[in-house]
Amino acid sequence: MTQAVIMLLFGGAIIKATVTDVFLRYVKAGLQPYLLVAGILLVAAAVMTIWYDLRAARRGDPDDHGHGAQGAGGGDGHGAHGPDGGDGHGAHEPDHGDGHGADDGHGHGAHEPKVGWLLLLPVLGLLLISPPALGSFAAGQSGSVGPAAASDYPPLPDGDPVEVSLLDYASRAVFDSGRSLTGRNLKLTGFITPGPDGKPMLARIVLTCCAADGRPIKVGLTGVPLDAPPDAWVEVVGVYSSQVGTDPVNQAQVAYVEVKSWQEIDQPKQPYA
Image 1 (cartoon, rainbow, N blue to C red):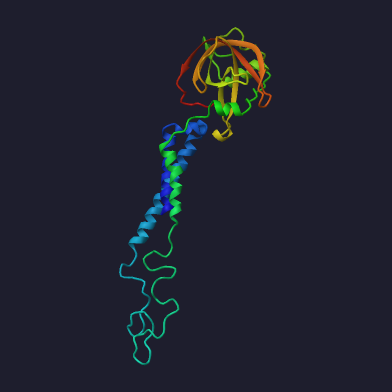
Image 2 (cartoon, one colour):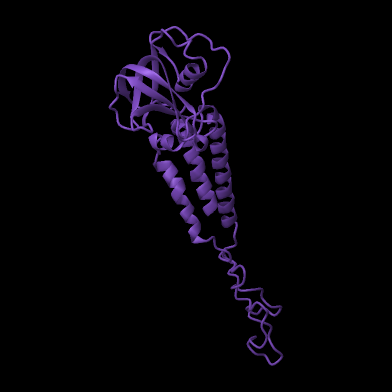
């Protein structure tokens, strides 16, 4: 029963996280339908297990007290009556017929360890606590994602400023020498993380599958200074900068953007890139 209750709560926690967008703090958005199906299957399996256990308990014979089988002469199951007309205590069955063996007839033969209920703690934590998305601490401990090299970048879409992801901006700035960025006002969104020199950088965590494999993409900032604290989400409007730095963690090239203006914003619904 313990396992079924834990499975029920765990499945419910997965469903809750999936329908409330909390799952976006753990995995990429494309995994939502798979998480939802997994949660529903866990809940269904748990409900079936609990129903089966309760049905088995109701089918138990209330008159079966587990005192052993009665003897042929109508005895009370404590042993066979001796030839001298004794009370049947002269000879005992090997298990004494008292129901204290592997099963006492009441379903008390095998108990689930009470320590198993401690497994509810992480499940309740998942239900009641929404952890924050990875932020500046994780970004500072990991090397920046290397911008993707490409031989030909398409023109940026229309708009002034045009919204560009940090990874796309870094790739165009480093490997295209900013040719597709020059002359355009750009809007970048990310959180603040301290750089190796203590100056703020714009960062976002890039996921391959889930938060466990998340790595940051970092972009250096020049121009108008930013005084937002670490982990604050900001929206930056700026232009391409030819400055390129190096991430000391993994020696990856780091692009820079010249900031014209910025504003602090709430964390986006999808915090990961």
